[in-house]
Structures are given as C-alpha cells and as structure tokens.
Length: 150
Image 1 (spheres, one colour):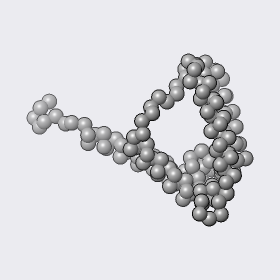
Image 2 (image 1 turned 90 degrees about the vertical axis):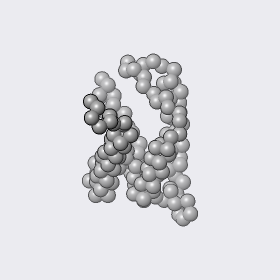
Image 3 (image 1 turned 45 degrees about the vertical axis):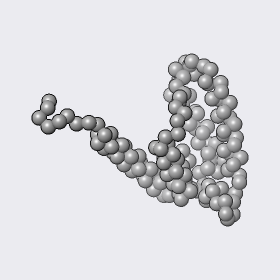
Image 4 (image 1 turned 135 degrees about the vertical axis):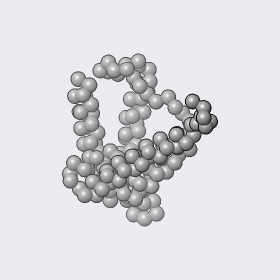
C-alpha cells in the first residue's frame, strides 16, 4: 500500500509540475529574469505549493504516524550551516542557468527532451562528486594514529 501511495503521490506531483509550467525551462528562466521580461505566473504555483505544504506539515507535526501507518519522520534541524547556504546558492544558480531543478527535470526526462537528459546526467555527476569530496574531507579531518602505534 505504501508503494502504491508513493506512486500516486509522485504521479500527482509530476502532473502538477507539468500543469504549473515548471517543466518548461523558458518559463522558469522568465520567472527568474527580474530585470527583463519577468513572468510572475510561477510565483502563484510556488505560493499554492507552500500553502498546501504548510497545512500538511502543521497536521503532520502533531502525528506520530502517517495516514498509512508509517512512522512520521520530519526534519528537526533548524541551523543555517555554511553547507546549507552553499548548496542553496549552487541550487539557485543551476536552476537559473538551466531552467530546471531536479523534480521537473526528471519529469521532463520522460518526454525524451535532450536538455533534461543533459541536466539529469550533470546532476548525477555533481551528486557523485559531492559524495566523493565529502568522504575525502571526512577522512582528512579524522585524526590518524601516530606512526608505529597500532
């Protein structure tokens, strides 16, 4: 039942992205072009999504389990860390340059659009590069035993 529910939620989300124009890079870039031919229509889409999500999160935070019985797992972190800010800047720059963010890119990939394929490949390479760099930095920060000590 959880898998079926996840499928239908994903389908509804994808249809919402298509109907809202989020899968059209030109529309997204026009929304982000505040100094040129600005198209404010996506602000209504995002505002509606924020309104619905706010209501859902308000209900969810008071529940120990989801409607289908799974444990409720909401994020609890509230700190603004440099990694979060840096990731947000990179996300926004990529969104502005490509006109895609991950969800709409994957939906558009289903249409066979080459730009979406290129974006998704670049996104996956970026995710792998981040994971590799993160693991490298964690190893570099871990103190090593002195030479000759086991």
